[in-house]
Amino acid sequence: MKLPKVDPYVLALLATVTLASIFPVRGETAAYVATAAKLVVGFLFFLHGAKLSREAVISGITHWRLHLTVLSISFVLFPILGLLITLTPEAILPKSMSVGILFLCCLPSTVQASIAFTSIARGNVAAAVCSASASNLFAMVATPALVGLLMHVQGAGLGWEAVQAILVQLLLPFIAGQLLRPWLIGLLQKHSRIIGVVDRGSVLIVVYSAFSAAVAGGVWSRIAIPALIATAVVCAVLLAVVLIATRAIAQGLKFDKADEITIVFCGSKKSLVTGAPMAAILFAPAVAGLMIIPLMLFHQMQLMACAVIAQKYAGRPNPESGTT
Image 1 (cartoon, one colour):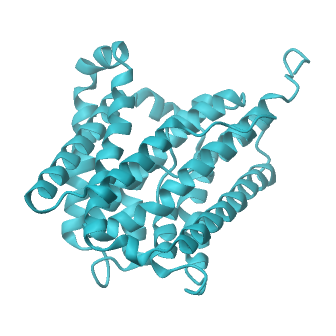
Image 2: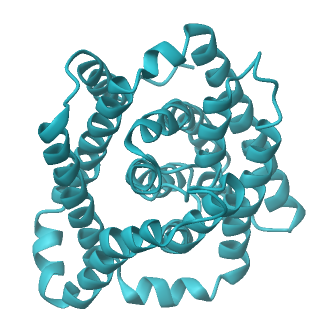
């Protein structure tokens, strides 16, 4: 079996980090870039609000067992594993990286990747659409709450400024998109690539802004190559544990194979598209750059692992035709 190719987007992320490391923006320019990132992220959530069908959300509620399972994995199991990882001695994993992994564990599932892999594996695509979307909607409240509770952001909890930023930059644009959906959905369907471009472009801008601030704060003097290798190993172990756990949970709860596939792919992923903006909102600029390093590593690993798993699921006998 051929190994999956490196996602070109991951190469773009690496190039962005390299560019920010060599040519970081500072002063007024950094403020302009940060403002641009906020505007693009707001536009991204506006587009997601306009794209998401209310009918799909309503129909998805009927499969509450599956959605509750995925949400429990994303916002209960993952954070517990993240807390355990923070107990790793600093001699093995620096505190900045273990906290970054804990932040990763508080994020929602991906949307496009979860649906795409579920489709390839012949899983319950309709449930994947609803479950991944519900995870991202729930995250607007759950992620800041978990970060405030588990990481003690801004002292003894989540400050009002962070909550206000989430509301203004993410939730309000999403609601506006929902309200304007009847007038925009035709245009978005005709130009469906717009959301993908904004998705990926917004993350690149956020990553560049965050890493510029991190470089200005001396990020590379605080992270050595052994620390990056240790972070990659821990992320790989975390992904393996969750992939095994999601399948075991689905089978233990007697879901059929199509639903099991949906739970595995929706439950095991973490969203870089949501995580990068969240980090920029919840943390100081220099800290945000550190927070997204484990997320970028985990992002590539989950794509590679799930590509292989999806092909294995797709190769199972088809009960409708009796063939593979």
